[in-house]
Amino acid sequence: MAEENDKSQAAEPKPTETVDEVEVDLSKPLPRVERPSKEKHESDIEKLNEQIKVADAARDAAAKKINDLNNGAKNSPLGAARTEFNKLKSKKMAIMNERKAIFDRRDELKAVTDSLINDAKATKGGIKYTKIEDIEKRMNQLRTKQETVSMSLQEEKKLIKEIEELSASKKVVAQLASKEDGIQSSKLAGKDVQGAIAEKNKALKEINDLLDAKKAEMEELVAKDQGKRGVIPDLIKERDAFRKKGTDLRNDIRKLRDEFKVANNEWYNYKKLATARKKAEYEIEKKRREAEKAAWLKEKEEEELKKTPYEEEMALCEYLANYLTTTYLSDKSESAAPEPEAVGKQISDDPFAGMAPSVKKEENFMKMGAGKKKKTKAKKEKKPEKFNLSLDAFDQFALINLTPPTAIDQVQASVDALVAKKEWYTQQPRGSVPTANDIRNELKKKNKPKSNNADEGEVAATNGGADAKKKPAKKQKAFVFSNDDFAPLSGSDGAVVAEASWGKAS
Image (cartoon, rainbow, N blue to C red; front, side):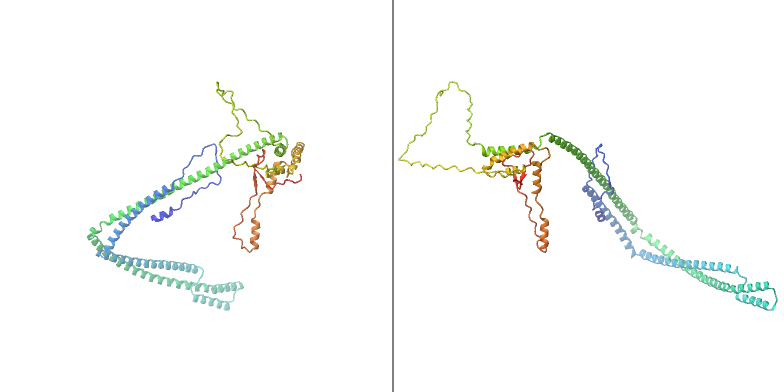
């Protein structure tokens, strides 16, 4: 029984009440419901199961003692008398069952006989004659009268009708005769049944006498064996007490499970309400943030409308022109700025005032021998400066649809083109030409890497599935340049793709 309890408690009870639509009231706080401890619940049930095992063991021990006492009494005179008494009792029950079957047969015959008698009475009430001989005799008399006596037509018709009725009553009389025969046979069978009942009653009387004698004998033997079997009633009470204790403990287990199930259902409902409440709060917060974002976007849009159109593009033109001018067109041999004089605390009564440090072109030192001659290095000719423009600068030119210079002799023309482009932007109305940000986004869309899964699937299909188990090749990301050469302008993102469409006609 304890094992069955363990099996039934193996699965955690699930909540039976489900809430499809949860209404959440955010104006009131949700009281917290703690989750019931499954470990504590199982521990309590395990303790009760141990007590059930102890009670069942004690009950089985008491029942074994009772059985041992009863089995020991079977070989005694009392046991033999009890066995004989049980045999006589079984024989009596068999005779009573046989007599009951005879009673049932008697009732059936009585019902059939009564039905036949009632039918015979009803049949006799509708006819004049109850025997075929009487009907034939009457019909002969009527035929003789018809042949020998003169009568009117009406009387003759009446006579013929009576003859026909007598002829038709022959069938009814025949049926009546068969019913009377059935009544007689039923009465005879009833007499036989009464004789069988008398025999069974006689046998029952004999069995009852034997049972009474055997019962008296058993009472004498029980009185002699009272000392040995006197403990059986106490053992029976003890067995029943342990059985009741086990039943009470099992009821306690059911009560614990019901309480745990209720608490678990409450926790699941709280969890569902908490989830719904969190979702409702998230939706409210989401709407608030969307409203704030919409207001912020509207404010930014209004600020953009207040700004000069194509301000970023004009700043880019100015930046690139300044970069090319300062890098490749300005004179680099500018004199270095004089170092600022050291500022220190004035010393009064300086003993070295008015003295200056001597500057020696050659330092005196002792030299042995003639010494080595100084080697004079030939002056190298200054190489012409190479033109170098970063790829980021090329992308900056692509954003304003200009071709970047590729040599030093093209720098001045590019600077002039940038100045003209800036002037051109000042004359364009807002939205008439794509901005640098629009061009940047378009380049990002074009250079976005595409998946090669479809092509690989086609190749695997044509190869008959030979390459189906091979791992797909890793996707190659587009090469992105960082803004390490110079800081980007405001409004531009952190990376510019190298595959810019610089050099294209605007």
